[in-house]
Length: 343
Image (cartoon, rainbow, N blue to C red; front, side, top):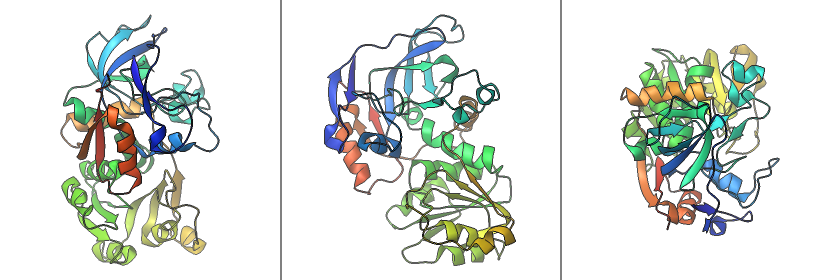
């Protein structure tokens, strides 16, 4: 098959097309013919070299899969060839306590497509059958969903238990995760405050349905949160910036509120007022990705028309290097999809 690979870590220019062996399914596995994939921040991090995790080279990136079942392995009787599917990007060993209780992303042997194993920048990809979800809908939209929607759902629903009437603050919400997190929170009846530093990028926040948009290059986010909530604060804060925002997250947090952290794009924490932490009975929870069952639950929000990815850029997979350049220059808002067009 054809795939986009890299043989050494580096900038977008290391990505190139290559012929690689077709994956074959083992027992309990499925090979999916990929129609669409999409760009995620993790793609760039892995390409450059992710600290602490070595990838086998050459490596195929891509955590999002939208396509059709090409071949099933022994013991897979609930999927049929040609069936449209998506795949949960993360799976575990399938046997440990975490996996057996639906927490595969906590498995000591957890693995993610395009990260520890070859991903969807290819014509074919192999995944565990338990991670495959039959899906109806537009193939391109489905290709933009998996990782972003999974993280948004796990953070807000599984971890923060967001509920009707609550206030949710999402820092830097203009990306794929942020725009879907807005919609997930709204689907559960919350009111959403979303921040950005760009008036141009604020367009996707409006499209996603944010109740209040704060341009942090012009306004103080904490003041706006307190004004909007009549001094109550945010019941849930989604913070993947952390370095420059964690102290502000605590300041904006309601008493008894929850801060969910799943990244640190802003680098190390500069300063933090720990008095706020205990005086507000704050709960700060770290998490990442999500499990196949959470992916299935999250997909139902899309199937019911409650969420959809906001796609702002479309390229072919043959233009993967250009896609990475677009993301790294910082102009991208929403999701960038790539149609498999190799050869």
